[in-house]
Length: 162
Length: 162
Length: 162
Image (cartoon, rainbow over all chains, first blue to last red; front, side):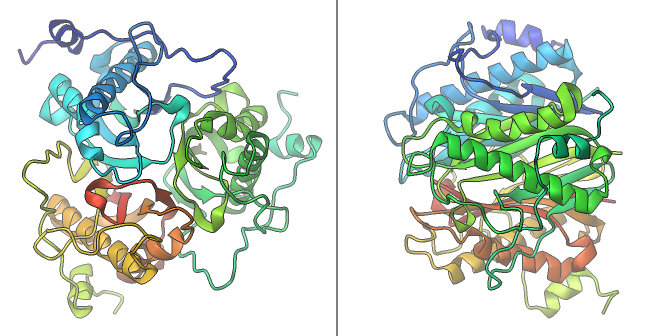
């Protein structure tokens, strides 16, 4: 299936790219989900969303009510939200020639130290979709004192585009 | 006023670019406020300062004494400190052809989740000065467990230069 | 000694580049320590390690048991781990033409605000090895609520390569 497209892989895996993130209309978010400059696309921090763009539950902190399994699933959903933003900006997910760099931010209660196991939900999705060469990326997975809307995970990234 | 310069806009808005950040002389900061490599300028984390470069008050955490309004003002001041560093490095703020990427770090007490409303103080300043095309940027606005000197906000960024 | 190589400097300073980071084999780390794209190398978050690649002690938080001196030493060890990863990826540390940008993340207990003094252990090592021009870098040094394996410091960076 080396020639299978990203879109076809998503469909085969039963995954849906969500609508744009929807938050309380009182909250202004005056920035671009994706900023393209030259051959790079810079991706703003994304949280996990449902297919309709609303924030996915549960909210909260790892080590403080949200389990590692839930955090892993949230990181995977944040990945789908990022792919949806990339598709809206680039038109075609095949234009992503290489993943470059990922910052995985985990909403962390005191004492939580398993940030990598959470952000693996994102990394393993990207590697499954893009394969080991295009999908490889540098990464940090770290613990935050708080995240917007109390989302459990927020992920930003930079990719090479063609 | 499409042809008004950034400097003229700042003047019209009554905004002052501060002197370089001044901290206790016992603290070594062995890094560049701005690092230019090719057509990119990489901007170190900046906090809010007064016109003379001293740290602006209040210090402290959002959700722990510092209000959202104070945090918004601090993010705007951090933006002015960044513009001042860019001017010193580049000579002319018109050389910034595009804002690319912003990491907005908010000193956050337990339970604080309104990081976007704080960092909007920075984003709205940049958009007002540079307009919706040059000023657009990818962004993450997230909560830190602590920041140097207990500043409420620290912002780093990357811009395209000509 | 302007022509002394980085490797020769390391040897003269008695510094050893560690083996690849070794963690509990149950933990998957599905990302690249260094990702090269064009003339840039993007370096994943690295913590302090011993020469054999095991995590260096002490673990824990600054302001919560780990002293500034220990944190400074940890940041220096994280620098050696990064240099080791760069050497494995690039073959020769002379290929680093310029340091660009560093994010220094300090595992911070409530009230700890001396992140710069900790990350100076990294910055001063890089400046000593690469000199003031190649070694200069933009930097943020900030406080995290938690880090993987409870390491005291994690550092990621971007460099220009030739």
